[in-house]
Length: 259
Ligand SMILES: [Zn+2]
Image (cartoon, rainbow, N blue to C red; front, top):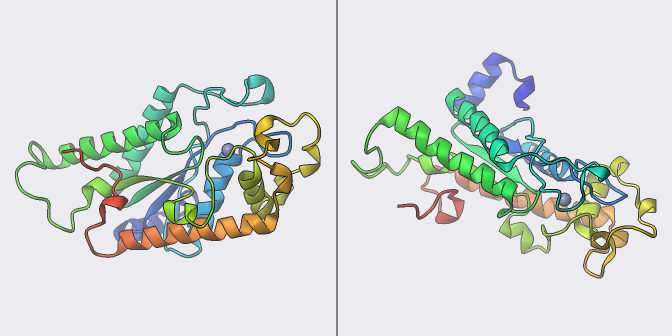
């Protein structure tokens, strides 16, 4: 189910039944001469689409315009950049709206710059602020301090930010720290072959496509499908754990050890 295509009664059902809302994020950034500029967002969108085939959930439209810091190229190659701070404020507004609609589980997927990059940090800060501010508005002073939270109260886990490659997928050999190299190229070849033109990896391709670790030329769709399988399995497994009526483990927490 896609948020933008739901009719009001379908949305109501999704909220009332506690379906997770999955939110892709990314950016427009040069990914070598051989791949589409939107790769980072497309990877998360594809991942969440595949997860949605196995878990009852709603997939939201992506946050497309994340900060890049022009780290890979400048705008001469089409990369877009925005203020990290203003991006984070926008994300906060939207996450806050999801909360107000009543979604009980909001999971934001990140691929671009991994979990400690400016984009992820801005989203994580936005998520933490929404959790604290909305909960305070709903429950008032000392909402945490006056009594222990009931075991089924998962307020700290209501908005979570997950990497495209969860640890369980990394253990299967999927590498997230790759820019337009073997991994990203294989993923796109498998999911959206029309967005890859490997013939353009000729002379002049940047180092991150061609050096001994990147090896974009060795990318294959079959390898990409194996990566997708590991990434999707990891997400499905973690989501299923979340939806079980139990206290999530510390690994599930977006905000942990804060008190
Ligand atoms: Zn990338």
